[in-house]
Length: 347
Ligand code: NCD
Ligand code: ZN
Image (cartoon, rainbow, N blue to C red):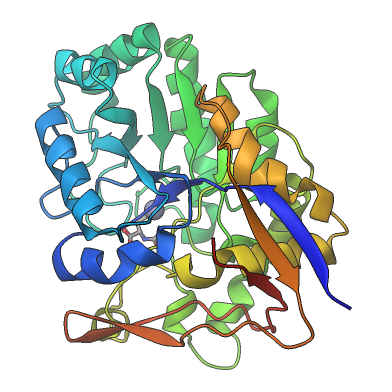
């Protein structure tokens, strides 16, 4: 029996598109989203409004002519970020948000924040102007176990930061724990959280049990099953504070399949089909649109997209490439581990 689902066009509130040959290869896989928050962790990172505008233009040039995607740019917060540049770029419509990476937290985060006292004037200017802070919520101290880094970050960094900066709008990016879900729920309408596709699907066994599987390694790393279940409950709850940020993060296989391989799951090509399956399994297909197409826009004070997409449930699984080519390298596409019966129809 075919079943059809029509949704307002989804948005992706956390996306890595990279630059150069990788951008050219991956851009079209996100072209069907209406808007996407573009992560600034290039090498070197996007730190000024002028750099964000130039990167936005490179993304537009890499997208197919008929792409729906309107890139929403971000600046990479550093110890030396200029509050006036942030506010000017926001008011000029160049950036939608600022991204906080604690120094050393993840791929290309060497320039992240080392001293929170130094960025306090930027945070205060952002609170005043209504600029959202997107937070990579992990501490980087070596003595903290990697599976505890999100919960420790919330207690020692995020909560004090929010208390000393009233009015700052914060998105907890890619939450991975029940502590993340609980903290997001403890806030008012100035606090929200994105959830990725892959963290709804895998727990840490996918990475480590029966052999090491680098394509499931991302940061924050997937946690125990109880945490995956907490994320599924949050994502399918319909609550406005939870919305999709895929964190689709392509890396060449040659960089992932190493003794020290990099973090990131490339989920862009099959994200909507995977999410439809997750929401069906949770008996929550009627709440998929809130998660993918309504809640994030509302948090960012934007109207939802006017046009619609259609997903059709067929008897035969949707096909997607196991890997794509990018600049002479291959990039492996996320394998959810189950067939994808929900087909995303062409526009
Ligand atoms: C991201 C990347 O590769 O840029 N990797 C990841 O595992 N998610 C960085 C990030 O968002 O932390
Ligand atoms: Zn990311």
